[in-house]
Image (tube, rainbow, N blue to C red):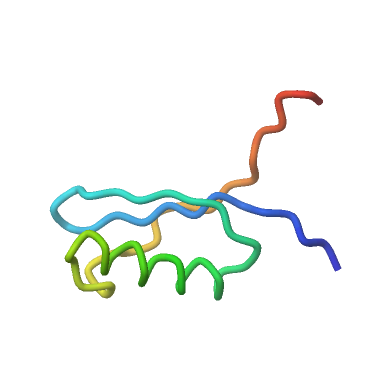
Length: 59
C-alpha cells in the first residue's frame, strides 16, 4: 500500500481557502477540523474543492 501524500484543498462560502498535504481523506478531514478551529470557522463551512498529487520537481 502506497503512502503517497496528496494535496487537499478546501474552501468556505466566503472564499477562505486552505490547502495541505495528507496521506488519506480521513487524515485530511482531521487536519481540516484543526485548521478551521485555528481560523475560528466552523469545520462544516469548508467543502472539499480538490485533490491532486504533488508535482515532483526532480522528475
